[in-house]
Each structure stands twice: as structure tokens, then as C-alpha cells.
Length: 377
Image (cartoon, rainbow, N blue to C red; front, side, top):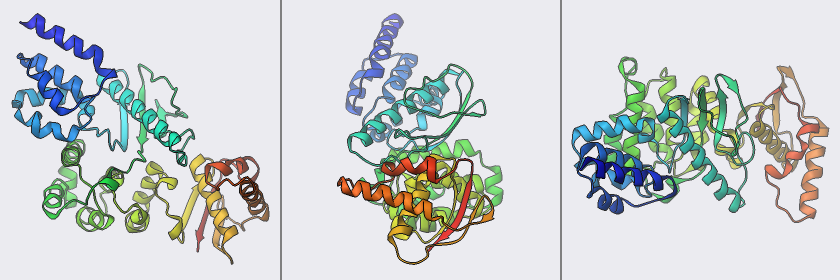
């Protein structure tokens, strides 16, 4: 009866946040639900805890009625199209709305899990705020805040941020085949008029669901020649969102900047760099590019330090046409000397130099609220 169904839902809700399950287990549990409303609620609770979410569509979701599918989309909201393996994206959430706050809490949980993984593996901290966080450019009601893992998500206000996962889902998969790519690219507009007519949120929701369902991975060449080439150059939002969405699914990350980011017009390029962060996409083997770095931002200061380090190690003049706050500028000997001293100290301790290890030079060698531009060759 209805009361019994609701009790089952209540049990699932009570154990849901602390449990994980596979699709085959979800199927067995759903078999015990007979009322549509209770079945939808049960699906939504378990959907957020699935370890093999890509399998749920063909095994469960596609077998449900259209009414049930629509109810699931409404109930889950933005959570329906968030991929726990690749949640990279831009989020704007009204925390006074239950589904939006649930989304924020889930992304907070995913960030903490990934932070623990990276710290345990002793990987470099490429985050914007430090502390291995995956959130970037965070504002609450339009005011910047420095996000950290112990931050309590408020119950009201407009929270806006970029999430960047450093997990490489693409590294585990083969690149998408021609048939799959052909099915995917038709979801993208191909002309300015199609861009104008398209419901951007709805279109990207469909694209995200396709990527989750088929666990797609791409080469940079596929993204450049088959997807971005379809989008008009003037489609700034579409091009930016597409590049950021596919970033975590790239197989040959070493080519990402030169093959994709560098090829974009200025506004798209700057937006991608801001959202993903220099340290997440930079390849030191191909450092001969133009840089604009805001030294008030932690990861961009670390990027500048890395380039000072390269300038020390490589012979000749490497910084060309550099400016500092718009004024002509030469790399000061004090910058290179202080970085060199830190590197020597680390080598004496038999510690391999890395970006995070040399952040102690910030207060003396670099100044906040300043902008550095130059070409490294």
C-alpha cells in the first residue's frame, strides 16, 4: 500500500548519503516499488550514489515510462546531468532552492573526495585557492570568497563558481568512434542562427547526458576538427562551455593548450584559462607562448614562478616584451635569485622541486594586485 511504499522511501533516504551501490542492486531494490511516485523517489535517491552511473540508462531509466522519466528530471534538476567522474563546469545556484543546494553539497563532497585522493598520492596542488580544492572563481551574492573544504554551504544566496576536476577519465578510455562522434555533433548548433535559437541550458543538458551514458573520451584533434569547427567563432558561450566540458575527457592532455585553447579568439581563450586554470592545462615542454598572468591570483603567481624557474635553467633570454602593470619591464635579478635559492635548498634536501614547494617566495618576489604579460621563448 501507499504507506508501505513511503516507509521504503524513508529508509532509502536515511541510508542514501552514506552508501554506494551498483545498477544491478538498484534494479533489485526498485523491483519492490510499485507506485509511480515512490518508484521515482527511490530512483532519484539511489541515482546520486551509483558507482556505475553510465549503465543506469539502458538498464533502468530507458525502461521507465515517459511520465516517470520527466518526474525524475524535475525532481533531480541539475543533479541529473552532473557526472561524478567529470563534474567540470560553471555553476550558478540559488541556495534557497532545495535542489540547487543539494547540487552544491554534492559538488562540495566530490571536491573533498578528490582533494583526499590528490593529497594521498602526493600530487601537486594546482588549485586557485590552495588546499587542493576543485572550486574556482567562487562568489556568493556577487562577492568573491576563498572557498575551502570546511566551508559550510549557506542556506540562502546566489552561489556561483567553476568546478574543475583533475581526474583524467579520458586516460582510461579509447577515443570515441566515428559513429558516436556523428551522433554527438548533431547536438551542437552549426550556424549563428542555430545558436540564437538554441536553448543553451537544455542543449548542454542533452550533451552532458550523452557523455555520461556512453562514457566518451576524445583526442584534441577530434574536439578541434569535428566539434569546435562546427561552432561559429562568434559563439563565445558555446565554445567556452564545450571546451571546459570536454577538458576532463581529453586523452592527449599534453596537446590541449596548443591544439585547442591557443586557437580560440581572445575572449574565449581568456575565459577558458580563468575557468580551468593555467596549472591544470600547461605543458612545460611547449612553453613558448604568450602569457598574461594576474599575480594576485595564487595559481597564476605559481605559474609565473614556474616560468622564472625555466628562465633560470635555460640559457639565453627567454622572457620577451614583458610588461608589468602595462609598463615595460625586465625580469629582475632578485626574482631569479630568490627562486634559485629555494631550488638549491630543495635539492640539498633531496626534494624534487614542484610548484607548491616554492610558494614561499611570493611575499618577497611577487606583488599582489599586479598584472604580468610576456612571451616566453
